[in-house]
Amino acid sequence: MPELSPPTNSRTGLATYLLDQGLVSKQVLDAALAEQHITGEAVGTILVRNGYLARGDLHHAERTEDFADSIPEAAAATSIPIELLERFSIIVSQESATEIYISTLIDEAVVRALVEPYCLGKQIRFVNFVPDQFELFLDTITREQRGPVKRKDIDQLLFAAINKGASDIHIVPRPMSCSILFRMLGVRRLMYDISLDQYQTVISQIKDRASLDLAERRLPQDGRFEVKLQGRSVDLRVATVPSIDGEIAVIRILDAEQVAPVLDRLGLTGVAEWRESVNLQNGLCLVCGPTGSGKTTTLNATLREMDRLGKAVYSIEDPVEYRVSYTGQVNVNPAIKLDFAQTVRAFMRADPDVIVLGEIRDEETAKIAVRAADTGHVVLATLHTGSIIGAIDRLRNLGVSPYDLSNQLRVVLVQSLLRTVCLACRGAGCVACHDLGYGARTAVSECAVFRDSTEVAAAARGERRWPTLFEDATNKYRAGITTAAELRRVFGSAADGVIGPGGAVTPRGARA
Ligand SMILES: [Zn+2]
Image (cartoon, rainbow, N blue to C red; front, side, top):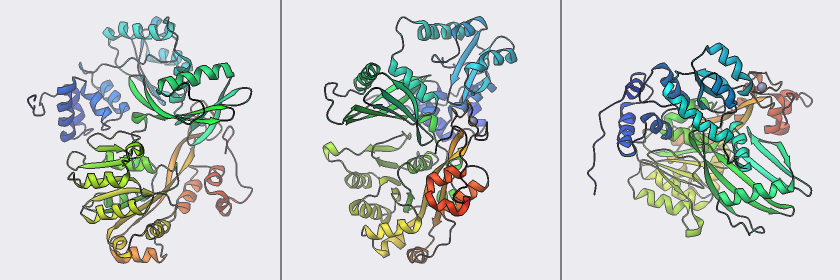
C-alpha cells in the first residue's frame, strides 16, 4: 500500500492566479493539486478535465500572466498552411470550434490579416510567444501536414465534424452513392456525397476503430472509440443499422470539454428556482422533455456546479455521456442485467447525498426514485413528458401515490431547444454559422417549485401558476432570438397563433 499523501501546498503561479481571480475555489484547487501529485500533469490540464475551468478561460489566464509552467498545446490539426506558420513565426496554441489562439513574433495586425482567411470565422486571440516552443510546434505540424502517413479518410471526416460543432455524423449508403450528413444544432444537413468505393473504406475504418465485427453486415452493432484532437480527447459512439442499401453508421460525438455546460448559460427560464430546489437536503427533482431536448445537458450542468467533494453524488445513465469528476457514474448494462433500479439500490447503501437516475421509465424506477427521495436523498431524474402537469400525471400513472408525490416532489423543469439566429449575419448565412443562419441553441422551459404538499395537489388538479414552455418560446421569438420558422419546426401548428399561418420566414440557408 503506497503512503497516502495529503494535498500538497506547493502552488504554482498559475494556481495562485486562478485562486486569486476566483476562477476556482481553494477546495477544488487543492483536489487538483493532489491529483497533480499523482499524475504529474499541469494543474490547468487537470482543472479543465475535471470540468472546473473552461479551456478558453485557462488560455486567457495563460495569456494574461506569463507563467513558466504553462505550455500551450500544439494545435497540430490547424487549417493554417505550414508555409505561413514557418515564414511568419506563428504558433497556434489552441483551436476550438469558435476560437483560435495564436502567438507570433511579428505585428499582430499583420498576422491577423494573414491567417484570417484560414480561420473560418473563428475569433482570433493572441497569446504570448514562447520561442522554445516554436521548434516543437513546427515539428509536430510538419508531421501532421506533410508527413509520409497521410491522415486517414475517417480522421478527416471526424475533424471536419468536430470543428463544425456537429453532434452526430450519419453515413448513409444509397444505391449509387453514399450521403454523409452532420447533425448541427439538432438538425441534419447533407455535407458530402461519396462514391460507394469510398463508403467501403470509411465504413471499414469506422467499424475497425470501434472494435466492431468487420464481417458482420446483417446485424446492428454498437461500439465506441476515442480520438485525440488538438490536445483533447473526444469520445465517439458508433451504431450501425443494416439497411437494404448497406450498413448505415451513425457516430455520436461526445466532446466533453466543448460542451462543459453552465446552468446559467443554457437559456433556461426558472433556473434560480431549479437551483434552489436541487440544493435542498432531500426530495425529487425532475427534468422533463422529449428526446433531444437537452435534459442530459441540464442534469450535467446541475452536477457540475454542485459541491461534488462535499456531497457524495452517484449517477446511473444509459450510457454515461459526459464525465463529471468526483461523482460515481455507472453505465446501465443489460448484458449483465445491471439496470436502473438495481443500481440505485446499490447507491443507497453507499452513503449518498445526491442520486441521479437517468430516466424514470416504468413503475419500478418511479418507485425506487420516490423511495430514495423519501430516505433523505436528493434524487434528480428525467421524465419523457412535455409539461409540468403532464409529469405529475405520468408519475401518478406509474403508481406513485398522491401522498408520496405531494411529499417528495420539489421541482419540475420542462424544456425544449430552439435554434437561435446567428449573431454574425442575423440569419442570412455566413462562415461563422456554416451557412445555417442559426448560431447556437437556447433552452426554452417552464419550471414549478413545490414548497408544500398543497401546491403539488393543486397542480395535480390542473391549477397552473407558472408561464408555459410555449409562452417562454414565444417571448424568445418576439425578442428576435429565434425565427418564426424555428418556432413552427418545434411547436408545429401551435405556433400559428403567434406568427400567423403564413408568417414563417426561413433565413437563407436555414433549413427548417
Ligand atoms: Zn451566420
